[in-house]
Length: 299
Image (cartoon, rainbow, N blue to C red; front, side, top):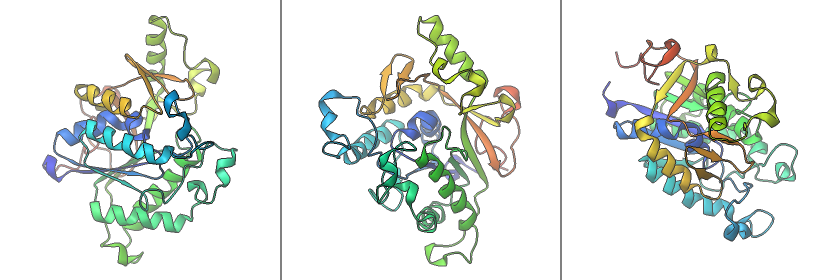
């Protein structure tokens, strides 16, 4: 399989999730000539606005943040070299649901309340069109429990199953069996290294309010990790893409702060858990991890 034959589909909840979780991976594969497709499920209308002069875009004011974030996503994809990016069901079909327990959960178009069969149908249409060998999304908790991340997980996993069934919605295209599915993850060891790096810079440990690192919701034991994609040559692309999401991310040197002021090291190496398909041979990554999401598919 040549690089041009490789096809990667990433399913994310909001604009900026793709850059934070997979920006270096996306830039690397795009630069190598693979087809990289991003499917974003909402416009991120409920996000906090970190740019004071744009505060009026917020959902409790003009409620125009979603449209603005389309432009941010366009700029981020330009920085990563990704040309195929889409919204589930089209821009604005599903609305950002906000954090669990907030009034935004009850809004009519909230993704959390979407008809699952309808949403999965939109995703199946993309899978059957793009025909990716590899799909990337979140784990069953959406990484940290955000309703839209959990729903994106449900939609992506169901779409992979149904896209392979020729009897399910044949009107959406010919059946396609995805070879490998990965969930984004962060190894405990990497979080520890990040905390130590911040401490060496005189920064407070970013995880203190969440308890011990082993208890952080998105921390994954190293033994559960199966792949580490080295995108360090493309760290500058990821940095530029993060800066493009200016309403949501403040970039400060090797660290960035999300709207909840949670600091995390900007990593050029991104980690994954294989949950569908055969694990490929160990590459140059540590711990016997794959160093390529397409490992084992090229023969």
